[in-house]
Length: 279
DNA sequence: CACTGAGCCTGCTAGC
DNA sequence: TGCTAGCAGGCTCAGT
Image (cartoon, rainbow, N blue to C red; front, side, top):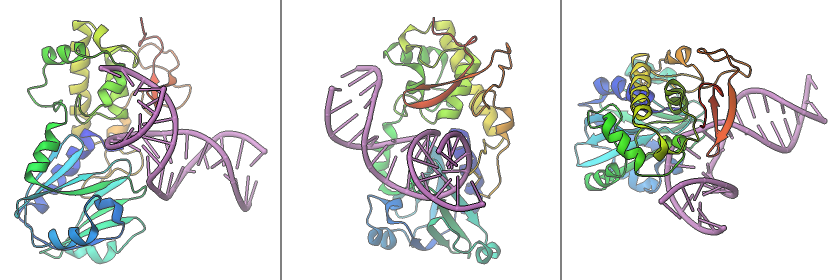
């Protein structure tokens, strides 16, 4: 599932080929992908726009358009945003799971492929986008996210730490993979109540979040199955994960205790029962 | 306020 | 072997 490092990688790989291009035409094969904009409106509004910026906010890829609007793309679980150079367009064809395609002024194409159809592409005014963006919590790789701030954020609510990390209005961009990895690195149980986390532990968790996300970006993201960069390449970070996706019976890399799979906030979580204790 | 459950989807897999 | 039921999972919304 694409999280901050995967979305950042897609963003970086698409920026160079897309900025400065113009969208010539759009085809929508699955109408719900562009909800709530009606397909007819999407198709009439988007073409003719130049792409002036490609950025990331939380797990969204944001395309700033020359006409003043913004396209935001959320990949959810299985979405892929692939740049097809002109010479590769023919071979790419329509494929099985192509939901939306943008044809560009250089003959290239930007394809939104999404097996499970959970992904969304939204067309927003700049004002609406700014309002939406303001609902997200801080970006964990920005300077504003410092240990002191994080500690006071944790103290401000009484919630289980893992669902809290997954809450995009609390902190932006973290999903199931990196929540499990960061909590394991900081030796914090996913059900630990946020307000009861010590200042020292809060710093450890802060640093674990930053380190986990940064090194995942350096490794171009985690590819389990569907995730690809904007140019179709797999990531390599999966080989560095210590808990997420571990086979049953896998031993903790630190203490050798068999890892355990539990459910927290309705999501599967892998922990070391010895390193990550509730009390 | 904090948490739970349904719904959105399809591909894979465990179990028969 | 062939089938089906159930699971996975980010996010939103309604309900407790």
